[in-house]
Length: 247
Image (cartoon, rainbow, N blue to C red):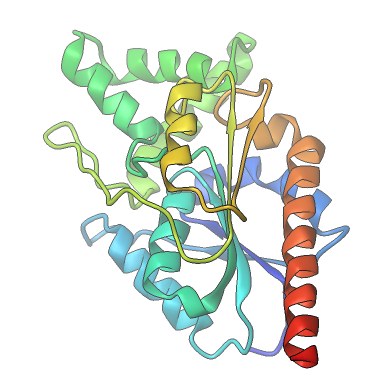
C-alpha cells in the first residue's frame, strides 16, 4: 500500500455509495480521503464479522492510524472494527448509526414485513418516502430499485425470519456520531441514546433535516462538522505531544 490518506470511508453497499459521493468530494478539499468498498459474496451468508476481517487485511500493513467513518451498515462495520483493532483507528465517525448498531433501515423494512400484510414492493415504496422524503414518481421508482438491491448486496444479517442485535457501547478513541432530526430509522431518541457511552472528547451532532441520507442532501454542513471534529483532535494531539516534550 503506497498511497497515504488521512480519512478512510467505508462502504459495504455498492448500490448506496452514490449517496456518499457529495460528502466525500467536500471532505477531499481539506483531507486526503480513501474509500474502502466491501462486496458481500453471493454464495456466502451475510456477515459483518467477515467485512471487519477484510478491512483488517486492508489496513494491516498501513503505517498510520486513520480517521475511520461510515454511514448506516458501513458505520456499524467501522464501529465493530474500531472496537477490535483500536490501534488502527485515530478517530471514529458514524453517520445514521443507532446506539444499537443493528437498528438500520433494513431492520425497519423487515419489521414492517412482519407486522403488516404488505408486499415487498409496498414496503419499499414506503421506505423510499421515509428515507428520502416525498419524491417525484420517476425518482421514487429509481430509489425503490436501489433499496431492493441493497437488501441483497448488503452484509446486513437481518431477514424475514430473524432480526439480529449487535453489542452496544462506545470505543476507546475519539468518536463523532451524526444523525438527522427527520430520520425515522435513527430518530432523535435513538441518536440521543448515544449519550450513555460518550466520552468528554466525543461529539454528538444532529442535522436539522435530510432524512436518513442527510449527508447526501447536506454534504457541506455535515462535512464542516466532521472536519472541525478532526481538526480539534489534531490540536489536542499536538498539545499532548508538547506536554510530553516539556516533561
